[in-house]
Image (cartoon, rainbow, N blue to C red; front, side, top):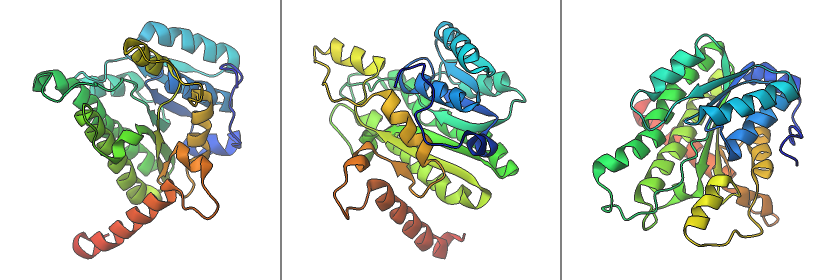
Length: 279
């Protein structure tokens, strides 16, 4: 799909906006998956609050969305690694009704041995992938629960499923996001608020290309694109699984998807825990 061609999903735009509109907050919207989420949501008729640490790039995207789709757009320039990021986000959003939060923090993994950097140097990265995520979910999720409608998509990584050498804090914080999203999925179903983890592998984005080029590595021909990945998340929001994994597209007949496996785990764990901590 061409970057400017609009949504590639099979969604009914009126029903989707009714549940998740009128505004979508897209965190990490300057390029790659975040920019594509903004384009496809704008094509569905959403007003878009665009957030990244590069407001000049967002200004261009804002003009594109307003021109092509006739929606309203807001630019929020903020560094998610900074301690006051959530205060800036809340202030800039103001009274706008955020019905859909897409958290797509696009910083590349720090491919370093754990002790190569100081604890202070790691702090901003950890803050972005933990504190800023849960503060956004808490603030905007509370409004959604009160309204009895809304949705959150947390764009994560397959790194969340286990540790890897030279990726200690990347895998750890991606695991945090995955478990946070699944827990909120279980808590907020009864409030008609949907939460989905969009778990991606290597994807052809500007960030990935820059990272591989810096390491002298060629770009594989079969990398999925943002235009292919985004519809997976939008189509699955509000359906059965707690997560969507690209590997689920190539399942053998009768094989249970990762999303359904994780859903069953969350439901079983919730049922067991309720015996000790209540519903």
